[in-house]
Image 1: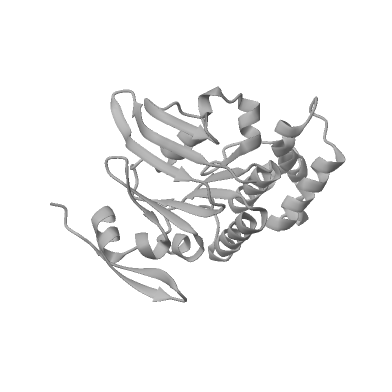
Image 2 (image 1 turned 60 degrees about the vertical axis):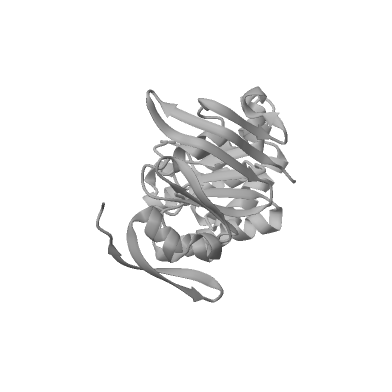
Length: 262
């Protein structure tokens, strides 16, 4: 299931505003990768470029050596799946049928096969949403919406699954459950899972690798959580004073105070 993503010398503009600057990145090892950084540094824009939803203003993005712009959308959707930060989708259908939509790229004439149903059931078991299967998607809570959206992404069986703040609507218990599940799936299936996160401690606890971004839309540091989530890096990038302690082999960030802007 191995796959290599290469981002080379990529810039991205929204109109005249430069959002991403000279991004160079290689991702090929399966695992859970968290992208962190302050608001407005281009985290979501970066993943949308990797997904082919935005076209870079300069540079290239390669998947197994092929320029992403040359891959047909349906074929690309077999390779990469996406779960947005907060789904605004409205599906007047059952949860199980909503999740089955993730199988569309693999279906012929839109007809679900026995394999499709097997994969959907497995994804529902992974995300512990099978008890919601017959409920109407529109009647779920925000947290349940998010878990079903992640399940739909998993049912797509992509080689890369990209999620934008997947824990944003979840309480503490379900945040931990989702993060643990995503990490375990990445390791067990050999999948690359990339997620944008604002929670430094969740990222530290579960990520195999952390990508830290900073203004003006650049990559500040890439590495293991203990290499990236240091007090110096957090102070420099976020403008906060903090203490970082090691807890069970992982850094844990204790925020102290906001630093005065120069």
